Image (cartoon, rainbow, N blue to C red; front, side, top):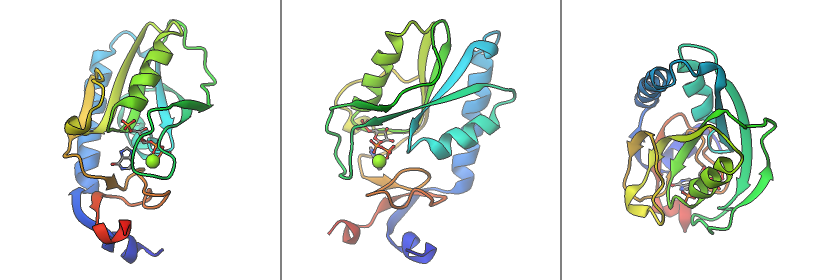
Length: 185
Ligand SMILES: O=P(O)(O)OC[C@H]1O[C@H](OP(=O)(O)OP(=O)(O)O)[C@H](O)[C@@H]1O
Ligand code: HPA
Ligand SMILES: [Mg+2]
């Protein structure tokens, strides 16, 4: 699919490249200030694959160095609904005992994925576990997830771009938008 078609499959652009970068910059400043004195024990944990773009840009917006690790879990498969059943496909390389873990995510939708990951990481003896997500859908929440850093709250429509996929497509869009109905049918 070429770029023109990818863009044409969007119904609405919710956030431009500039808006995304601006907000990530603000979050990075806030995080750096909040973790003052703890930067050496800060570990950013990205959740593959959707968080790849957020991690890359958020991390580069930090005013100093922070460590990074990745987890992969299965929850959505190729559909648009979370199954709620979470399985670890790739675990962290790092022992997080006594670390300040900051989970970096693209989206909290039902909350099922992050709720599970948070509980899982807390059980490993991390000193703290907090969440930074670019997007959150408050009206779609099936469980409440205590989320310290949120880029944008959005309505419950399915969105793609900037790491977010529909059937593995559109992750490389630079904007975030809602998918046009003709794409589903
Ligand atoms: O709040 P929830 O309803 O649980 O949904 C959020 C999760 O779903 C997406 O991942 P997905 O499982 O689609 O994998 P992906 O990151 O590889 O696209 C997204 O990246 C979050 O991890
Ligand atoms: O709205 C969404 N778009 C893409 N992937 C997702 N995973 C959970 N919600 C979404
Ligand atoms: Mg997905």
